[in-house]
Length: 248
Picture 1: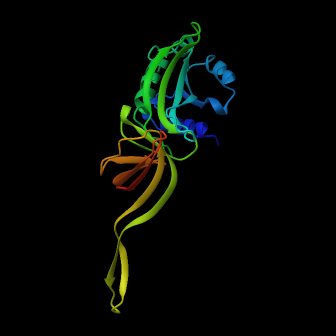
Picture 2 (picture 1 turned 45 degrees about the vertical axis):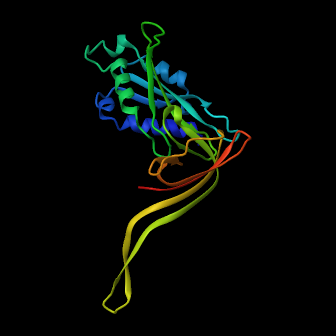
Picture 3 (picture 1 turned 90 degrees about the horizontal axis):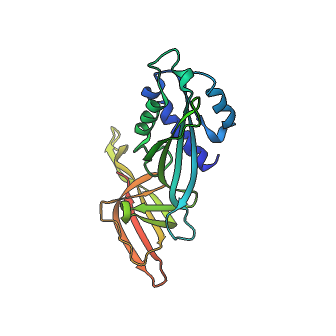
């Protein structure tokens, strides 16, 4: 399964679980990459109800690391409605505007399972084709990496992306042993179980700002609290950063 289709399926799962969207009973959710979308839209416009069509719109690389594909993945959800048919029998029918507002609220700030960052709502805009084909286009974006292996820390314009060249993961925690009736130690559990990770990565800046101790960095969908951070700087436009962190 492609990365972008997997993302769309995750979006559909979130929407299908949203009670405000599903409760009216007249909303259909489809993924553009899985259907003959023109046929599905045509059928929808010939009956009552609302169709939400999920599609990714491409990916824009956001850094100059040659081996990294980190950047913004675009998401558009187009909501279709034939107002004459959908509202003919019920003036209070659930409409594309109501559905669009619910979708924007439902997805903004959501981090899908298996993905690193939260979805950001950007805009919604009417794009009606005619009086029988009303449309609302809802635009989202999410910072993701298409393949490869990257690490991210910082916020907004201070975000730093690194291309991972080495990774080591270790189970952390304190095993607890208690004396048994026979006098031998018996394993009873682990105190503070967690993962410890050590990453070596290449960053494009010659002097990137390292994460503070305790600050989070993100890798492969998990967040780690920084316990150590070092940098080896070069004069060739890149630096090597080593991060040590643990899950909380």
